[in-house]
Amino acid sequence: METLLYVFCTSLPVHVLTLFQYWEYPWRSRRTAIVLACLNLVLKSVVMVWVVRKGIGIGLVESLFSLVGYGIYCFTLRIDRFKLLFSCVLLLDYTVVVRGIGSFLAVRLWAASVQSWQSSLLCALVYLLSMPWMLPFFRRTAQLIRYSNAPAFWRTIWLAPAFTSAVILIYTNAFDAENVGNWRFLFARLSLVASIFVVFFWLLKALEQMRQQAAREEQNRQNERMMEVQRAQYANLQSYMEEIRRARHDLRQHQNIMQSFLDAGDLDQLRAYLHAQNVPRPLEPMPLYCRNYAANMLLNYYASRFVAENIAFEFQVSLPERLPVSEPDFCVVLGNLLENALEACSGGEKPYIRAAARAVGNALTIVVDNTAPVQPHMEPDGTFCSSKHAGSGVGTQSVRYIAKQYDGTADFRWENNMFFASVFLNPQPDAEKQ
Image (tube, rainbow, N blue to C red; front, side, top):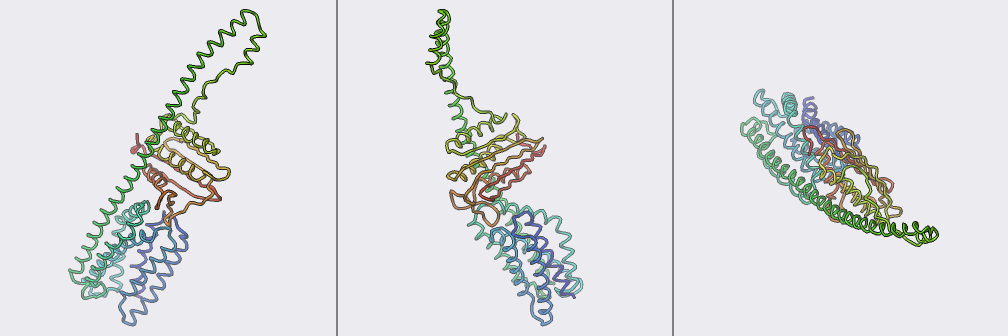
């Protein structure tokens, strides 16, 4: 009975923390993950009871079922296996420290064994006391890992905390009751959590800076694109104004000639003149898709590109003159979505793009749907691979990053030769970007 209580109090929180940490990730099947985790706990309990009765050490069993648990989440969770391994090492370190504290107290206070009911209950108590601080940390870690784009980095970085943890576990000999009761054991475990969390803190901070740098670079590219749009629109405006000037000059000449025919009463000559002349018309003014100047220019820029590529398009945009978010951020989102749509449907049969944007109160919704005859390749963690280079696409990553900055969401999916992108920006009053 003590062995079953030990497995329940020390292993169940690990699965609960894992599910909580990755709940917002794309899953192959959450239900399958929960069922397999429960089966893992049941099988571990049976094996642990047999091992304890045989007087065999439980270290190998703990290691084996930890690997089985890792395999379960590799199978059911859409995430790069090295990213998962990295965060599992963090969770393992937390679990090792909790178990170490529980075992140390049980041995020191009651001279109980590591698998005793006292040790199990103390582990459960330490979990309950520490989780209010640890749960937000694990959730934040999962978010940073999810949106980082560095495959080569993740393939090797997990080794640093893993080796550190392995050395301390071997040094402390966690399953030797005599060793567990020493103060050296507790000091080693606390040193483990201190060193590992310092490493993780700076590593995650570096990841956040990398994401921000990538977002700034993408925003700079979009700003340069907006400058190109402005220059093109300014050139069109100059051409339009020159055409208007010429048309007015020519119109005065036509008026003089027609007036002379009217004064002479020669209506037949007037009719012949009107039929013979091809009076030039001014250029069509720039279409007005919305009231916001920057967004309207961007839409006109892509409209001209769609026309040049023979792509049918439809804009349904209702935006005020002043947006509730910063114009550069909005143009980065809209520009990336339209650029991706242009690339996805170019060369296909009957290409079509539909873009819609609407402001509702303090929130913005942006939707871009387009034909996509080729299904984009998606990473296991739900990010789309770039069609221009190896690795994840920077455009969608930048859109997700900006959406997160505005407490919003960004969703992308491909279905039946169509790609659907939707973004929701919900700036808070105290964090609005002006």
